[in-house]
Length: 255
Image (cartoon, rainbow, N blue to C red; front, side, top):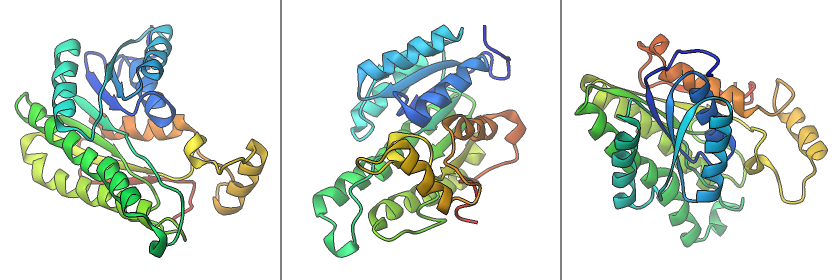
């Protein structure tokens, strides 16, 4: 059985839920009693997440979708609502990165791919989530941004920073646009987390730990469960007065 009942009766959509932060978020909601739709492009990893949720006593459904394609996003939201009996909370976790490099060397194709996924994909997801929620009594949305962007810049990370700064700005403006519709929107901006995305090519776990301990004041990378805890707070009734917040969870790296 779930460990607690804070989200019992709640239907939650988590994109990018086949691994990493998205998987941790899906598991955290399920342990709190929610029904969870786990979405992404790879059916195999989504089914792995569903199996983990069910092993923990929760309820989940896997829905494959590409959030950069509007028809796919529209279907994703409709399928979630049909299969779970509604859509009360959405967590938009899809994101990608490109190889680090200076602005002068960014390839246009890489730039467009990054923006299509990190910004346009988020816009499409929010459009359809918000439309469903405002027509059915409201809801809560939490977007996963990054401490790189609005809060911190690093050499060679201009493209990624620009896309995630856009996520932070889009989140806050959407929050202003739709709080009167009963849709409460916030973001979480993680720092380096123990996922493959924070590793360098060929880097060992020990080398990664040493590198991050030198740049993160708390002395380590974050854990996916720590990011999930921030997401659950922002989605919960305890955060009812929290609107348009971009919550940085990065061990002090951008302080």
